[in-house]
Length: 130
Image (cartoon, rainbow, N blue to C red; front, side, top):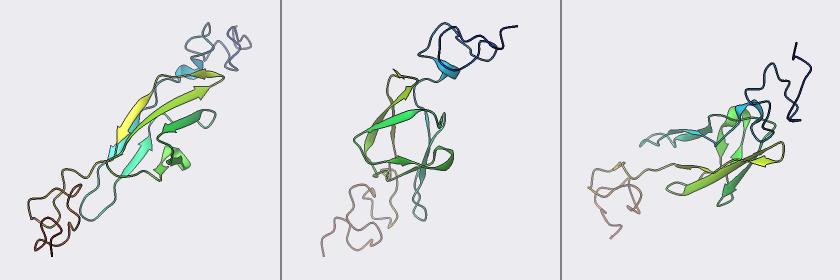
């Protein structure tokens, strides 16, 4: 039985390691992937790191977001594209990216998208002009 073998030294035994010859691919961990729930006029939206692993270190560029329970991110800035790399057992992944965008929203119906409308709740100020 190979239940006690760990040929690549990544801490995962050969019987459950999908690639027991590659210490840079323990548990098949790869490029960070994300589930983005876009904001609506009544909710902020969410981003979750879909393949979150508590034993993996994630680096965000630009810095800011943090990872909570189950991979749920906090500190995400709207309309900012983030690049994220994962480091697991000393090996780094290629970057995954995500953006939490509100560019498709027009909550006040003035024809100006929320990402550039300084007052997206007031249809009488389509460009923020009073």
